[in-house]
Amino acid sequence: MVSVILLKPLYQGNIGSVTRAMKNFGFNELLIVGAEIEDEARKMGMHAQDILDGAKLFDTLEDAVKSFDLIIGTTSYESGKDDKFLKMNFTPTELKEKLEQVSGKTALIFGPEDSGLSNDELSRCDMTVSIPTAEEYRSMNLSHAVAVLLYELSGLEGKREARLASRKELDIMRNNIEEISELSGHTEKEKLFNEMVGKILGRSMITGREASTLIGFLKKIKGELKK
Amino acid sequence: MVSVILLKPLYQGNIGSVTRAMKNFGFNELLIVGAEIEDEARKMGMHAQDILDGAKLFDTLEDAVKSFDLIIGTTSYESGKDDKFLKMNFTPTELKEKLEQVSGKTALIFGPEDSGLSNDELSRCDMTVSIPTAEEYRSMNLSHAVAVLLYELSGLEGKREARLASRKELDIMRNNIEEISELSGHTEKEKLFNEMVGKILGRSMITGREASTLIGFLKKIKGELKK
Image (cartoon, each protein chain N blue to C red):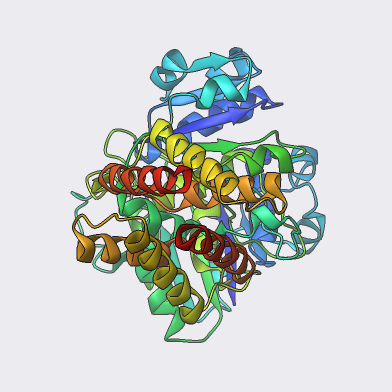
């Protein structure tokens, strides 16, 4: 369970946008330090009003993090950063791997839009995370940073609906193509050609249904060539 | 090289936020279909004014995608989505793996904020990608979606290896297959079959070299069938 803490956010619109991103990725607990929730946040929050309703407001970061087992600070990506305070600065992917190994109430803290978390605030976190950005422009929009991190931390696996063609169906296709190749007198570099066909079929993500249509088609060609 | 195409974006602020996310992850080419760039976009674009300056404006999606070898549509994540041509819907991670295998001018298309890309627009893409979101609230903010996808695809440059078959080479293959289908008397559901073939070719990431071998093969079959 990961909660989002916004420390002194400057813009109400961003508070709303953050809750929308939270809702998109299935995160529900928001804590805000040093700001209220106003109309603009409600407007940008769209269908995440329940998160805004349930948000907990604090005066200090210290109070906000009290109930958490693991505190993670976010900071912009700077490879040259003096890492006295940042010894455990992870990428989002690394952070995900870390969190998979542990359980416990976890807070992900985002600093103000203009300055981010201070070195002092970062040093009090258990670990820090940075989204790798282009050197030319490291500073991310607050809600973009939240969206990227929660995307990475969401445990949703991509699910494919369609059944992929089986290995056997792919083999039937490949064999048919090889036969057609022979029947048509296309003998040039036979082995390489067959390997290439196998590779293309393998990566084409052909579905079961498509496979049966294609097999019908290939058999038809074969029939014609044999005449 | 991946370019971002915004199709009929409704809100100027989003155009600006999108360019900021592009800049964060090192992507520079923006194409906009059916909208202008106004002050609010400039304001939200922050330090990405060069992307806005260089943005190309088009009246139709068809014109915008003309120069691309690989066209990827984005759509919100719905496991129940029921279009037989949309079943090859990738997660951002899967898309990255696909793109690492090939090079070629690639377009990533985002639809309007309220409705997204239509099924018709999606069916004309070579492949589609969805960010896995929570069932409770699938609809992402446009610039959040761009940020998450470009975060996932960043670091791609330099990794892409083989040249992708050009749009023209794919067309030649498709036309040849259609002719072979006709010559072989495979008339069953012709239109659907041809669409299916186009779709499979689009997502098969066939390289230029493979295309020329396959075209030779198809011509050989055609020649034999004509005898």
